[in-house]
Image 1 (tube, helix red, strand yellow):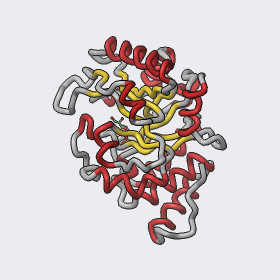
Image 2 (spheres, protein in one colour; image 1 turned 90 degrees about the vertical axis):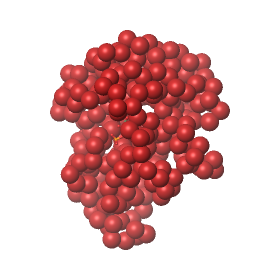
Image 3 (cartoon, helix red, strand yellow; image 1 turned 45 degrees about the horizontal axis):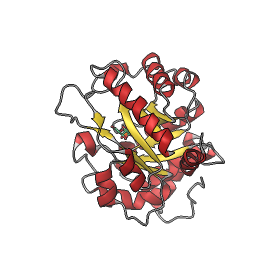
Image 4 (cartoon, protein in one colour; image 1 turned 60 degrees about the vertical axis):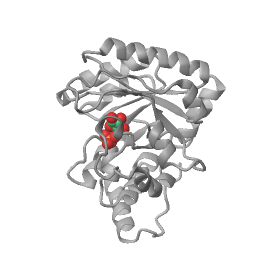
Length: 273
Ligand code: R5P
């Protein structure tokens, strides 16, 4: 890994825990004004100091994040289809590497649709993006999208999608937690981060998901709805940090959540990266 690329990776992953807490706010690129993300600037502002990286599109970056922000940016560069379309896999690269460099981001991200109608184009786009990334010193995160076919979120499918992404050169792979997640980790030679998916029944359930993912080998999370659709987003993010960076148990993380909920400016220190 060349110095520039390695340096960008090091901005996002803690040298101590080797993990990262990415905050995902890129949902609008295909879902529109998602619940609690309608005013992205207001949602992002209180969370930004507690995230190791912020994952979003160029439109929201320019409009909702102050240029003085020092949080590393993971820029989504794929899109072109919305939830109104039956086939979500018809994505293309919508933001150039030149723009990613101009925006001074720490990584670019794109969805890959293994097993979907546009699998071939999707994987070729990933290969091309990695080639550009290697030239520019820019890490590429592949997002193993499963479209509307949620039943595909099993270890066999996700292991295939993650491994193929890594084989094509992705430097980070974002995927979903599933039963036998260890199998997915085992077959993927680059760091895996885990998305949260739709809001779970409780904050505790999301803490449990993150805890299992880290225990089974994920190098962090890239979570959105289970943080900013929570009634206590900052408290939730701090609790997740304790799991990701400090190996906190679910009970310990939940205690942080409760303490922060009751005393938002309490002495519970944000976990250091
Ligand atoms: C979805 O298209 C995006 O890639 C999201 O960033 C990803 O799903 C993570 O967000 P959430 O935890 O809400 O699933």
